[in-house]
Length: 222
Image (cartoon, rainbow, N blue to C red):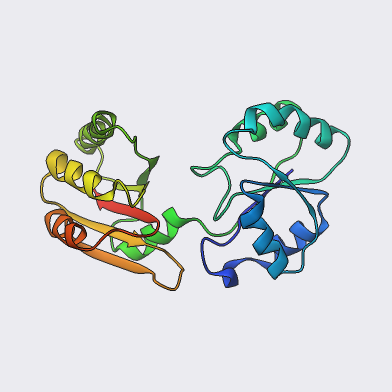
């Protein structure tokens, strides 16, 4: 089974190895077949797709394992970036390992590493939190725990955020950590890529005036 990374925005970031793998496997598990279909069309790839997302992962895993046991070559992709990173696939990979099925990673883009490398913050160690909870109480609880960790280990913190919750999350960071400097990355590798480095209070003011749009990755040093 192949875990295949795809571009997070710029199609030029896909590797030759990823294209060759997508062309030569038997089945592609796609988070959204419409999104992956556009990618495949761009690279003239005609491999069969099966929808495989957070809603169907548990119900379809047994079927996918049976395909793998039959000798089918199966690849999993997400809508963008590296599969399993805040995307479906963990349950399937775990079951494949239990069934002695070889897992091969086809590396490529992932927004968290892109954001870390352009942030200007320490890169020697970091904590990735995925998406914080939609519920403010749980979100603040995680941030409080990260603050406690920082008492023992100075580390860079990275997480993803929806444009709908960005402003609320920035306010939570300000409440927990104070007016620290933070890096907000938007639409990485895409046409309107933007990296904002400023105090959290200034960014709260900015996004109170400018409506957040796109996918966001936040980076700060705890």
